[in-house]
Amino acid sequence: MPQTGTVFVQETKPKENLDIPWNVVVFNDPINLMSYVTMVFQRVFGYPRHKAEQLMLEVHYKGRSIVWSGGREQAELYVHQLHSYQLLARLERSQ
Amino acid sequence: MRHLRIESDGVNRLRLRGVDPVLLDCLQRLPEILGQRDAPEVRQRLFPDPTDAETETNCDWQRLIAPELRHLFEAAGETVARDLANLAPDPQHKHHFQISFAADHLNAWMSAINQARLILGELFQVTEADMNRPDFDLDQPKGLALFRIHVLGYLLQLLVEHASI
Image (cartoon, rainbow over all chains, first blue to last red; front, side, top):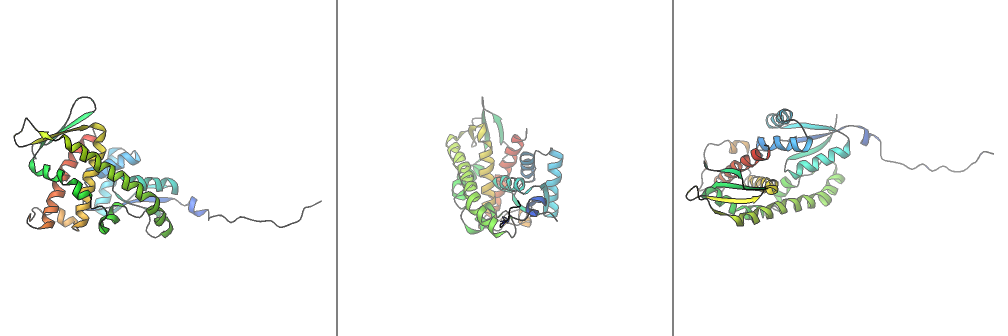
C-alpha cells in the first residue's frame, strides 16, 4: 500500500558557492619587499622560485595577481596564511 | 650598514653582526612602532577583510581571524624585544653591535620588522613614489619614517636571504 503524507525538503545553500572556483588575489603595496613577497609565495603555495617571482612581478607591475584558484575553503585558508605574512590578499569569485 | 651580516652562532642560533647606531636606533624603537597597530589606518592594513563585499564573511573574519593574527603579530614583536636584550658590542667593528638569537626566531624577526615597516607606511601614508625618492628630509616626520622604513628594509632583505638559503 502506498504511503501518503507530507514531504519536507530542507533548503540548503546554493551549490554554486562550492562549485565555482575562487581566486586568491594579492594586491600591490608600496612597502613590502619584492624578495619578501617571493619568499611568502614559495612558503604558502610551495611554488618554485621562478613561478613565485613571476607572480610577485605581476603584483608589482599590474597592481594585483591571481596567485591561486580552487575551492572556497582552501582559498580562505590561503588568504589567512597570506594575511599572517602581512600581504594584502583577498578572496574573489572566479569570473 | 656595510658591516651588517647574519652568521651561524653555534647550534640553532644566529648572530646579527655589524649593527650600526642607525639600525640600532630603529630596532630599539620597534616596540614603540609596533604599539601603534591599533591606529585605525594601520588596523585596516594589518587586519584586512578577506573579501570585497561579503559583509557576513568579513564580519566573521574580523571576529575570528583578526584576533588570531593579532596574537601572532604581538608574539613576534615580543620575541624580538626579548632577543634585543642580548644586544652587545661587536668586537670586530668599533661602535657597532651584535645580537644573538635562536634560529627559530627568524620568522618572528621578519614578521616584526615587516609589521613595523607597514605601520610606518600607513601612519605616514607612504606611496610608491615616496619609496623611490632618493633622499629624505630627516627633519620632517615623514622623511624620518621613510628613512626608518628603508633601514629596516635593509635588515629584512638580509633576513629573507638567510631564510631562503
